[in-house]
Amino acid sequence: MFPCCYFPFYGEVRRISLENTFKNKTVRLNFRYTFLINKDRKIGLTFVKKTKSRGPYRIMMDLKKNWWKALAILILLYSIIGGLLIEVPRLAILNETIRALFFHVPMWFGMIFLLSVSVFYSIKYLSSNNLQHDVRAVEFANSGVVFGVLGILTGMVWAKFTWGDYWSNDPKQNGAAIGLLIYFAYFVLRNSLEDEQKKARISAVYNIFAFATLIPLLFILPRLTDSLHPGNGGNPGFNAYDLDNRLRLVFYPAVIGWTLMGVWFSSIRVRIRDLQNQMNETA
Amino acid sequence: MKLAFHATFAAEFFKMLLKEIQVLFKKEVLLEWRQRYALNGMLLYVGSTIFVCYLSFNLRGAQLNPITWNALFWIIMLFAAVNAVAKSFMQEREGRYLYYYSLVSPQAVILSKIVYNSVLMALLAAAGYGVYALVLGNPVQDQWLFITNIFLGALSFASTLTMVSSIASKAGNNSTLMAILSFPVMVPLLLMLIKVSKNAIDGLDRGISYNEILTLLAINVIVISVSLLLFPFLWRS
Image (cartoon, rainbow over all chains, first blue to last red; front, side, top):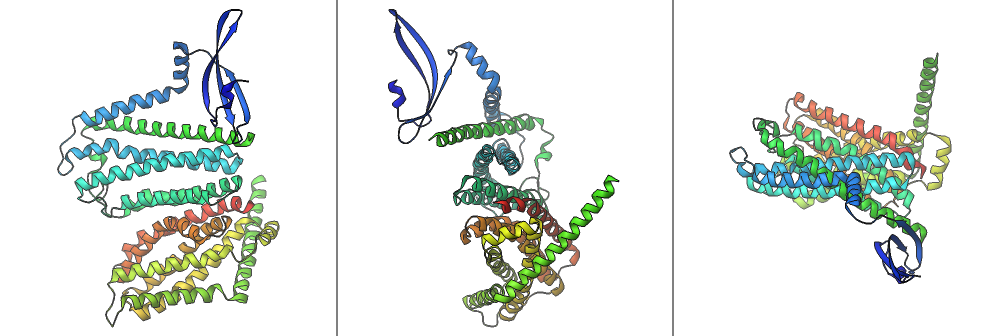
């Protein structure tokens, strides 16, 4: 009917306006169409939703629902600007690299939070057999791994300037690397299975199993061994900076901001995957 | 009244479970005894690996550095364990598991496999240690601690790898998959084992190793209980 129905986009969500000439008057109609077109370019599902026109009201409604995304951006802007500009205590060796606290440490907090959410959804999948929970588990693990890689890279840069080497056999560095290996193995395991339900169940089992062994790796072992990492074996940790509360003033918002950012990443990925799944079902 | 009922029910359940584990364990041993494939094959595997290592180091009378000796021993054990335990879910066909499913509880299956694998690993590790010490020399000063550590290692390898091998067997028994799934999971255990055995080699006071041994046992408790919880879900597919 409309030429736009034949756009070769898969799962494209687009806003179009139609102009109809109706009794010599131009009437403008605003629609939001969701086209789900399968590979044969036939329309699988046409989901028509009438929406209000964009305006201040619409923006307010968006904010009401997605206030946390705006919060994430504001907090991150604050923590990046503040993290680079505030005055930090002068400590030997550390010097200005103490600012890594605002950029490196939040990555780990974000990673652990996202991976915990992933395990939570794996448990939910096992108890419900709902594939949507599996999608959430994978996507949260995905963004958790992105945070883990960023954490390792930022940590390596920091280690180069304070310890003299990118990799210096530190238990925390090794633990982090092994944690990443576990999740890479998780993705390989997923790719090796064909059947959706089987893939979801087996990878959920591995996710929970691996997380249970990751906990001692990340939290118990580094405390048993000597490490140069701040917070270990007599090296000044975060608590040693207590004298200076300005660090906390930027550090805590940075943790919250990056965690929210991770949740945002994952939610976008989850939406894409849900749409793809819908498309496959209708195709 | 209700509590008493639950208590008797739980007691009955555990009695049943123990009995099932016994029967299944006997079945595993019998299967192994008839084929004599896993144990002999693995003994040969360990023996030839050790011999290859010996030849590669090209030692003549001189001993390896204790750190290298220790690391090499545990790496050989790790690979032997991965290969030995990977077989535990390959021997029998899918259909037979369906049959067991109608007879016994899944917990009994995984526990009997863990027990069987730890016995197998203990045999392998003990034999491996003998050959290794014979060929590459024996710098260990505290023998009893080292041997205890080997048995602890056998238990830890078996408990972790049994669960991983059941996962890998569901994904088509791919040996690459077995290795990549198990190695990262094994690392915390391996680190503890290597540390304790280094203490045993140096003949340090045993009190120093208690912390590591306790951690090792705690990780084993976590792994076995998580396996017990998760195996029923794997089993169903």
